[in-house]
Image (cartoon, rainbow, N blue to C red):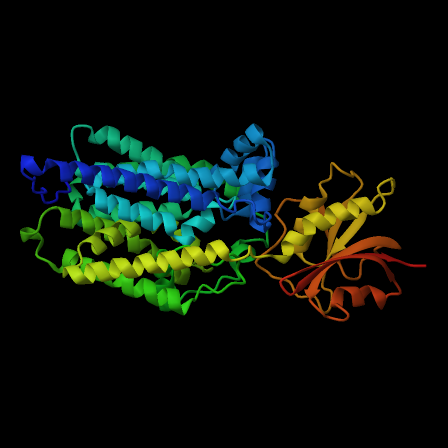
Length: 537
């Protein structure tokens, strides 16, 4: 299937200079957009500490080659490729926050290459290419995951590689067998990066069935090859499974989505510079959501209407390729929505839809460039420009958000300085897996081999976020019941709301006859983190 477009009218030779200037302007604009793309992903790269999931990534990568697969498999919800590549990255440059965060940032930046190949395969003009790249560059959703030591920027990169090769396969040609082999390899690394890669493959299968049935057998052979090569990982998952610790522990807190969640996921892809930074932030932003609907979703709907409702016999072949793009952009959300209701546990998560970001922004750019009449297109572009400028300025001037979990690593370093000459083993008790894991990472056993972290469960007055739990097959943090003997001299770590007089964790020990002294405290965004030494006289 060849994606065609109208041949642009050539200007008379006497007017050739404006054409040259236009091409130069487009090249300059492309360079500026690439610069913006890079700059927003590198800005503030180390402004916040590593958080729980990022620590897990580093923890997984620390394992030796004989253990890394089994450790990743025990977690159940992510394939191992990202952790393997991160291990290589750490071996090359260490574990500084700057170096760790450069890995996802540079992966996201490298995605510009397959994106440009996709645009060339679609035969987009320079304006459409530059606009779609600009939408990708300013997407707050993509910026967030380009700065997180997780697999999502890698998933974005491989999804664009897969999209490019899939379009080449649809377009056919003398090298279609080689292209199919390359597509199979690309899809293989995609599904070994994240399970949502299988959703992308399923949508490709659906596109073949709908519009390219004569290629069905060859594509089915490609999909079957993926399944066969995936069997070793499925076996590893089965081997690593522990009784009573299934997916409910990982994603039992994820609620089943409703139709508003689909709408929110679709609009999230288009918000410039803005995205929630933690699970405590709400994704439902009425102002930005309304602007995305009016300025992006409505033009997309119009383009989709003409692409699917027009008589395909009388339309150029580019209508067919646009239909494929619409399927790749929006079907993943519908698939994950359906699976979230069919499967025992909901798998809904907007971050999985990063596989749709490429086709979504390309279609949005095409839709915006084809708005008619002219005054509507100009108005929409002006509103988009003002919105993006204001959102970017707001983000640039806003202070870096603070998170209470960022208190634990510096407080762990303070703890090591309380009695630096002591050789006595140091015991720290926490009451939440989130706190215990951050403390374990911050203390770093190499500083004091005698330091031990444990977590006490079932303490009255202490609430715990069930979205965070200690890694499976990890015994360096002991898990104790509230009735367990604790000794006469140790430290406790807990968090509480600012101004709370007697937090439940502290009250638990004072009622048992312990005295608190000394105390380390940090306050961030209305929450306080405490490290308190408890002893009996």
